[in-house]
Image 1: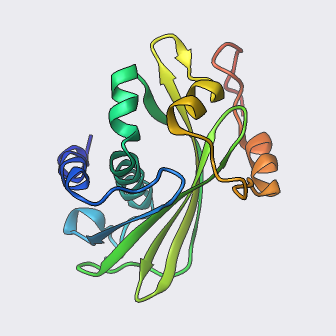
Image 2: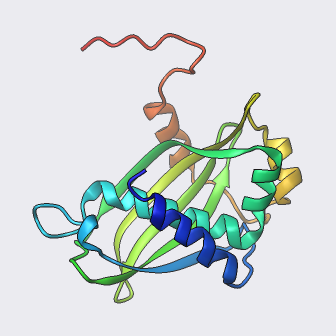
Length: 180
């Protein structure tokens, strides 16, 4: 909820921007705000995932997928994330969040997102997302019917499969007891 107003603003602004294809790349321009930084005076590591949400919303709104999802009662949820940092974004610095779908499998849609400043990658994340409805996860068949088929050359990198297998928690239908 800490970015609810920024998210609402981004949804509004994205609706005014040019159309994008869902299988294309999106970009939004941002600035590091005082609420984004930590004690080291650079953007907090957890904040990157929050602003990356804004990039995914922009792509969904501009492609028309957001409206379609809302009409069908679908909501996006993050199922897994990984990030690598290269440089720190500083207070007041302008940067872009670059977003694209890199593929999908039977369980998730995968995004690559980057924080870019001065034509350099500062951070890069891979996010596994799912679409859910009141009756449970949305199937790939429903997603592809709604979004259209991905380009033929959109092939999910092999390492993503291993990452998901090695990092996944049990299904919500199975126990996941806590024990160190």
